[in-house]
Amino acid sequence: MARKRWQYPYLPYGKVDLLGKVVGAIERIVKSAMFGCMMCGNCLLQKTEFICPMRCPKGLRNGPCGGSSKGRCYVDETRLCVWHLIYEKSFTNQEEEKLLEVLPPIDGEKRGRSAWLDLFCKIEETGFRKFLSDPGKIFQSLHQPDWWRGDAEYHSSVCVESVSNLEKELRSGFVVTCEINPPISCSEEKLKGLIDSVRPYVSAINLVSNPSANTRISSWATSLIAMEQGVEPILQIASRDINRINLQSLATGANMHGIKNILCLTGDSSSEGLKPRISRTEVDIDAIQILWILRRMRDEGKYLDGREIKFPPKFFLGAAASPFSSNPKFQALREEKKVNAGAQFFQTNLVFDLDGLEIWLNELSKRNLFKKVFILVGIAPLKSLKMAQNLNNVPGVFVPEEIIKRMERASEKNGAQEEGVQIALEFIDRIKLIDGINGIHLMPIFWEEVVSRIVREAGLLR
Image 1: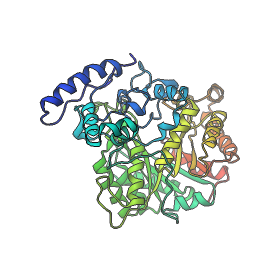
Image 2 (image 1 turned 180 degrees about the vertical axis):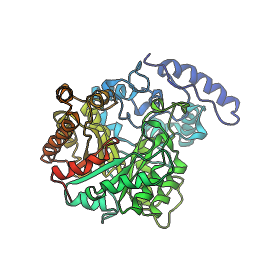
Image 3 (image 1 turned 135 degrees about the horizontal axis):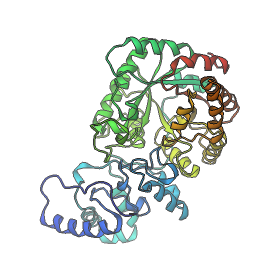
């Protein structure tokens, strides 16, 4: 079970010579038995405690997604989360800091080919004596090719001034953002009505990208409509729906139209979507790689392929944070890696347990992240008892029994909605007093009309 791969083995593109076939066949036999190897040709075993990250159903190469609750994979609950195993072993061996290195996406030309042969060729190129004197340097050149060169360091933005109104407001005070689910039809009227209803109460609006892996109008299109309505949008980019080529063209195109805020996500698994579903195997790039690529485009003025950008884009980059997905120490390491890669603000998953939130915040503090990233806590007003119970089944969300019981008692008196609003207001009052929190992110979940009331009664009206 531990070594079993999730995806089918890769096959090489194009012709492979006899030596490549022989070495590749031996490598496949040995590494498949030991590590569940699927011959991606871009081996990272030395970086991941010799546990193959490609056993992840999403093929994530830089850490777990936000759904790895209690160490289980939410795409396939019969399996342990591969990245949870990697983190456990790394912390046990006191080698967790090496997991901060931002690892590259797969080089498609190497798929199905021998990583051993790459190593042998590199040794021949540099000399066997040099390899023996510093083998780590040889392996590092294979793990970090010239077109990527990832590291484990923090990279602050080169933009001294705020590039968006959201960034400006976060620098000066407590901020409210909210999200809107785009419509499934091409009519703009309902969307414009929803935007107008929350516009006076928030600093920016997230236009959600295909929530639950179900098709809706694109975040890009709805962000443009939000701008027309006088609201600053937060464009969502989910790695599930994108590859490295259209990521760069989408981001530069959005920037050309004045969209500065980008939230970089992995995205819900396609297993949650309606049929017919896309393949549930690997993504081309993960959320951390998206952050890394966009940050370098902004700060270094270069595309991934090395071409220079004469007029680089200006982004305010965000990422999702999930305080309750797994061990808080693991999550804090994952969050630090996102900050190092380029994240300037976090919007957390839904929070219903403030004691658990503070445990996560303490771990972030130990990693000195509060001065490097703005944190907005996810708040959702509960509309019913059923909603509270269902949210407990959402990966990365924890609704304590105390909240469930409050909603049960309120439901008996037909006051569930009012109780849900009061719970949200109580949380916001406490959150405003917590050091390190810079705002809240309201997720009304098709209850947008409640946003105005919550903002007013919480004393957050701008």
